Image (cartoon, rainbow, N blue to C red; front, side, top):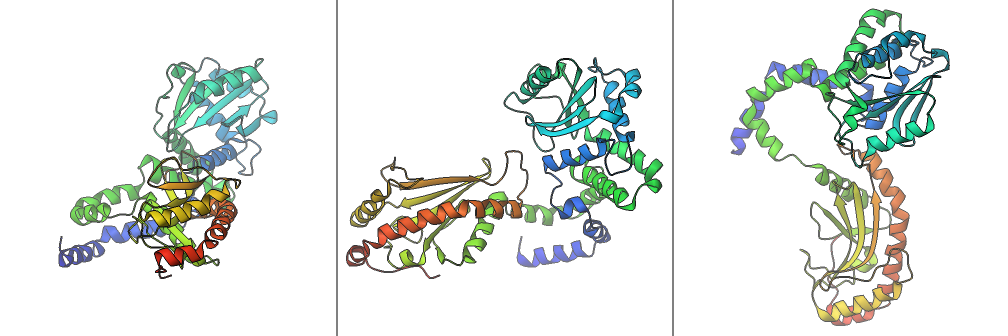
Length: 405
């Protein structure tokens, strides 16, 4: 599309009353969206645990827990959860555990244990379900044991055979229960509690069930402005680009003077100012640097790998740089290069999220970066000292052109 066409279609979008409606809805404050935890599995488990706790500050007592257990008991696989026994459970002595032995949620009664595996944006893997089941069986031998696989749509487990033991349950059912709670008991709840539950309902319907009124509006707007929106989506930055931009902004604000070098979406490369002034531009990166520090972004593995790399290029330059770097073999993170062209002398990887992460969390990403920064700074400092000892050689043989900060 031409620029004039895009501008015309954009004006049409802005004049659409449905667009005004959806913008108004999206701007309404929602505590889960404000905290950016709409798709964070552990936060959903925390909130669910709060609702299910008879002694929770919500003021519902055992109401929500009983509703939850009754629906589970109606399942075909509920051999150890009889509907007639639910009222007779000891709710005064119930215990809820979060992340015990990596299990998302345990509800422990005197005579019954309910094990819940919660999956929001991912599925079970690595024999998780059988491991958790075996752990519960081993530690609660004298009690009845009931296992729940909770997903937005009530999907079956991936792990072969575990559908015999795990009852599937959906967030659709939870939204139905919470709707009923608000309609029947809403006026008797603390206003803050009522708002929390209402925000949670909106989050589930809008982000996971796609049943909120705003979802219908979104479909209508898309159908009416499909050409423009498709063009926008095609040019939307992905997660790697978002992380790249966060790193670039952080480095540019850094007090110690790291200068950005050749880069692309997956690589953020830099030199400290002292090395930027002497590293020759006779390599194979886009700006021809012979040496750079690199941060390689992997969204799939949720990690960033920090490297110190010598580029293919001028043999004399490579020899000077490798001589300098080979003196650092006693520093943590050092590795002897395995390739013959791109020579990587240091590796230091750091995780910025778990494998279930579905969207970029800038605050969490920056927190992980700050935690990894001291180790990276130590390597940068040692490498800089070693290379500066060869400053005269580099300047004599290779020139002094450098990047502009």
